[in-house]
Image (cartoon, rainbow, N blue to C red; front, side):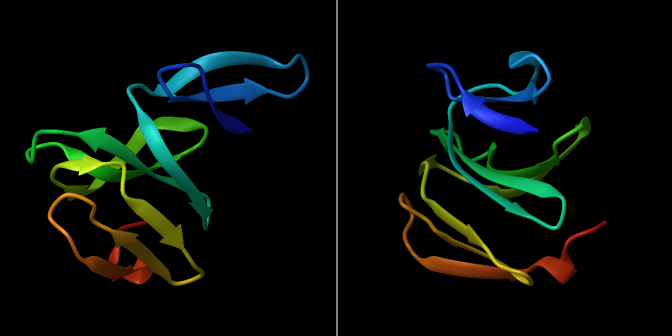
Length: 105
């Protein structure tokens, strides 16, 4: 299982047997989370356009982290459906969609 926790908004793995947060998966300020097809999709607040503000990760595999959208953001808005990732860019403006089938794995 996973959850967003602590003041920094990091994503950590959570052990449901003992209630402990046992491993950091994504550090930094995570704003929005969505779950689809075995992936956690998330946005972060960033000021540098060279960093990914939307990414995805498999909950039990921190090495699976995949950057998806690069740019500045205050966290934006994010939604994932059965076949589409959609987001609102809160810095540069606009609404966007991406077919999940277009992403690897």
